[in-house]
Image 1 (cartoon, one colour):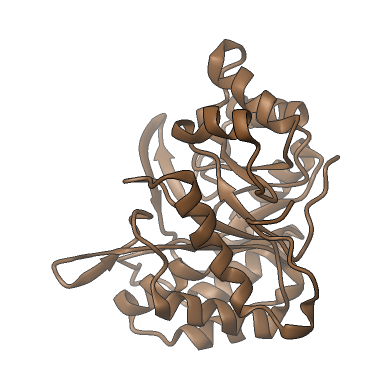
Image 2: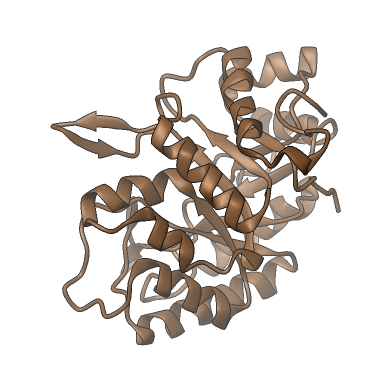
Length: 282
């Protein structure tokens, strides 16, 4: 199984860049692959991602397991994720702490859950099934959210921690999502960080957001905002350097610009970290 250095910065693999990546092999430490783009066996997309996997370590990041859905995880979908993870030899798989389907209907969105101990136990059971099937570490990512449930009795960070502890899984801590959610829900992002067990954090996400009607929306189509970089630095100070991924999903700039933006993460690492293994080193 491929390994990824703790002190490393990766990029999301986007179709518009695949030909350039295969032709020039830029100095990128690793790539994160959007799982659902590659679940169909055969075809050019699957061949391309296999070719990238021969040159770079990859991890899978999904948007469709819906571990919080009442019907549980779709077994066929999970089996396809397992097959792709095996084929690409990824060191871990991640997806979101959310729900998004009911009675066979799919929202194709990442919807927040009621934060209660009962829901946490049910979600943890689904996550254990996922991790047992994948036979590799599984990381849960915190959402950006804009609404909450009146019946919630826990904070989001308490809920995330409870699920991770009960499922014995990892956490993908999205710093941009913490910042965006804090502005919608009125909590201090530093309080969120203080409530996280960084021993469970296996990866960071940073990304950019847009303003719509004066409110931040997690669009992944802008450079990372300065307050998000500051919060990332605070997370690193609390939990140490972890593999860090720059997300950029729309209005995608040239690959060289993404590599430059991702490299900013290293500015927030401790001076004693040593030689970087970021987006400009492999």
